[in-house]
Image 1 (cartoon, rainbow, N blue to C red):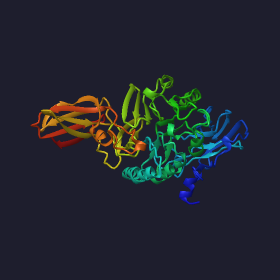
Image 2 (cartoon, helix red, strand yellow):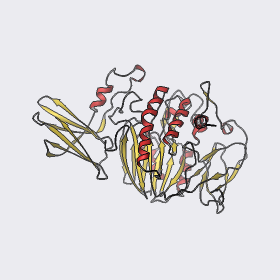
Image 3 (cartoon, rainbow, N blue to C red):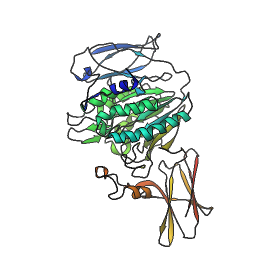
Image 4 (cartoon, rainbow, N blue to C red):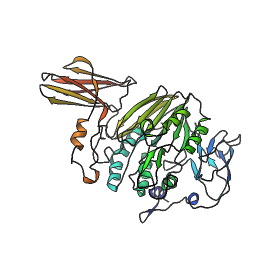
Length: 471
């Protein structure tokens, strides 16, 4: 089987319908309640690997053996890939799981990394959200080459993986194989979270809405490790059983699984939690999640869904990154409704330290804000849109090279978003892509005599970015 045919088999389409290659878990086929297996490096067993069916969590013994009494609702057995080992993938799609079927033994083989993984990187894609083949082509022509170039710039031996935080497609589940092809072309291991547009609708309740996703990508919540970082992917989209109705909620059995998973994670480890819907303001039971995270000193949450970029300091130990989208404004233009360019987050891990920046598709990493100058009555106004801003950033401006201090933060509309999306400028099918008010705008007013405006933005890592425009 050639490469493209195999990728298609990861979400096979025949006559517009999905044909699952892993149907046992969904067919009602009876299986033994107890399963067992072994995790090895091909020869020796690997001890203390965390294994789970999504309900129970166990460790492998000194010889790499494990046993799980599976839950009746379990569909997969998966390992939390330990630090120091390569991620198991099929053409870069994560495969650290097996689908439960009629057999009762599931073995896993790991390969040790050739270098220390204390330093590594990862990228976060939010909302590729392809609906048509035309959308897919845009993704393949713009987003994929951008990641390829970024990965190449990191060096041939760099350790880098990706996480897609949901809305892989836009209700068009037969496009999952096209996303798989994009991942294969990017050439780095990719993990997936379930989005509200990745679900099966009108087939029942929340327990059936992830059927196709599981057939293609495996469990909807799981964990893995790299270096001193522990990664968790959660499903925080609860389907309510009618039409496209859903809410942000982490169901109780998932929280119970997470509590068991975290027993094997030191409180001072870097903890990366990925989900689709923003936790801080859109998940109804976020307090229950925060309770599980008490005592962890370095937690970063990665989300999407909103189609804008926002950083939220939840408390001194928890920071949420709500990402702008891969698709921009649903593939109708180069920016999101808040003015954030379509793109993705780039994260650099060094031990338990995390640094990050937003990578705008088609631009160098130095593009971290846009600057506009607008004429007003008897004066002018400068507007800086600093999309990855948080309270530790500093926005300074200069008028004709004279330092004027920091710009004033104001909520408002990005001028380019207004120009591109306000009114009836978009196709009828996607006319909802209107400008959105954002809090990461910074403004300054000045007289008409000013000739040029310079803005220097300093991020939380002391990196400086400068734009100069004629006034």
